[in-house]
Image (cartoon, rainbow, N blue to C red; front, side, top):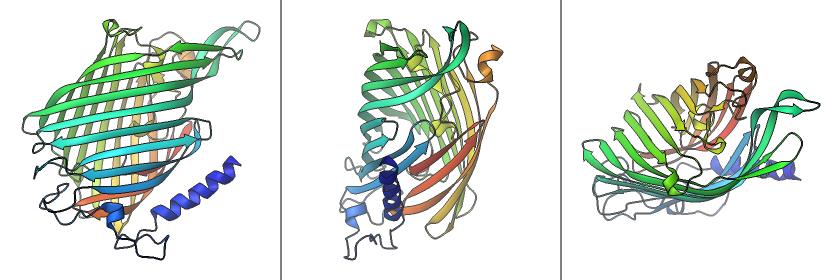
Length: 397
């Protein structure tokens, strides 16, 4: 029954996304639908991502999504995004509000609501998000005294269930440089299923304070073709904020965009996530997701991950385009057993082997107004002993 439902959902998603005509009519219906239902009334502007005073300020775009990976299985969801001008600024990018929901065949689901506001000629940037997750995943750990006393590496399923809230406020302190304060709060339980099918429930309440720092020279927030975006975050998770573990989380993203021709862009990305101190299992990071496509099993997990990737983007015919990408990653863990997968367990090494990634994808432009281009697409990527299939709205980074 699930497979039949997901097949129908896939056909609907494909038809829906690729049925935009040149003037933004939906071919799903015979009657003419005003384009403002999909993209508002965002006409010509002086600069990318800005709106004139007399124009309507809210552009609403709901789109279905379809995902698949080896851990979650197939998933169906929806993204509803609204773009608007948050104040009377002439130079500030369009702000946005977004709602995302998804359900996967392994009974994982989540619902997220978030916003990014650009205020006072882009002197202030505000981010806020709330959500609820029920996430079924797995880790790979070594257990003693299992199956007659034999130690072994076991796939260990676990479920994270709870709610979260995050915010960040930044102010431009000089040209292109932003500094601010942020916070994160999560109330959840992690249920781990042991090899003997018994369960352990561990509360995972995380409260952190952060200092977000960014440097932004992109020519467009939503569809950059040139510039650099550096996004860093230093977070402390102290015991005095009612945390069971005291540790530090750091994150750094460096994105670079270069326009090769009118239709070709080369985008590159470096990502670092490093945690220090008494880091609990639930707060570790793993190789995968946007940072390195092609890894979906959570096998390479530890206190630190480092990845690099480059993506070639070509809008080769009207609204159609394709991407090709390669990447490389590495993960770090403590040298004791039980923190990573496969041969990494038995080697006792702190660093994983180099983790390559390669893939390609198709793109179709679903919107082009006010200097903005929003693409929907499908990516498929392969990693070391793993692979992933991704349906996405907008680019990976």
